[in-house]
Image 1 (cartoon, rainbow, N blue to C red):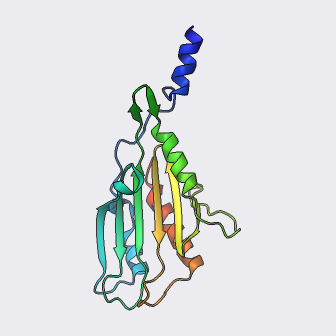
Image 2: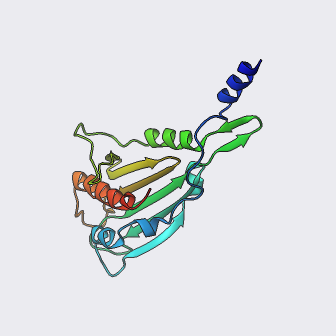
Length: 182
């Protein structure tokens, strides 16, 4: 009888890992805004702001956006997002935050161009690649996912980085952001 109780508790998610992160860290505190500003073009209309993006993933999330601003001649928007997936109890079932973060992490994997995965200077292995023309890199720490996206230039704006360079810029910014965490 006890085995059925433990098996049921396992099946309903009660023996998964505990959530490590209760809320997302401030993304603009993690992002090297000077480096992101250079990518965005350092123009007069440069904008840096923090926004909520929780609604997008059904989890609690924040993003730091660095954009060339209206009327910029060149540059790329840079977004750093921090998303925390917390465990949710629904009746007798517990959906685990770390498992939800892992699922999101692998489901959000950018397209691979077949090249070797990037490695951060401290040995971390983020997922990286191009997704819809953007350079994209993401890294998971327990129930927290940190991701950086460097978007293609707007239609009226000069492209200063090719797709491969956007991917590398995303990896560099991500590695810098997560190096001070844990």
